[in-house]
Length: 257
Image (cartoon, rainbow, N blue to C red; front, side):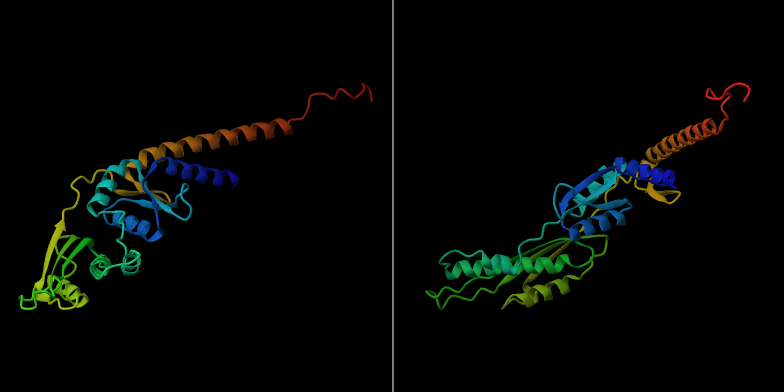
């Protein structure tokens, strides 16, 4: 039983030796998104505790999949850093804020909250929201009113967008006072998948699942551990046979009785 645990422990060490980190110092939701994105693209990824950062996580992949995993993460803009929300943006005020400063901070906070909402949709890779809300000049009361406008850039995976432009316009228009959906410009951009997919095929070796590129390393380590275990068993058997062998003579026994 102990030898079996030694075998699987050595296999685990071998798998860890074949893995390389592609992202670290992540919170758990971000690490889960990275693992899920890599899994959708055929890359076996593992979430681990980051030993250098308390309460943070890292994502490891096979050595042969590191290049492709990095291209997938760059394509999907992972790990994603969320912009500050409404509370964070409004909390960063000066000692005596002016009306224009407060208005600008409110617009920035509204835009970032809209980006957070759009990023919560499955398939959305990145979202940028730009708001243009002019302020009426009290010195020119007869000047024609300028209506607020907005523009949204949405990057998504796959050929079909996960949300329609009309739904995006309705979402943005509902968050800004005086903004109509007709004045919201939405640009949807599909992000192409990485072309090179070498080494991302998953294979099974007994109870273990690994990538094809890491399979030779895993087989080599299992063979080495198996040879070591066979040598240990042979050594233990030889010691057992030696202890069971009857001695030829007892030096303490006297002749004739």
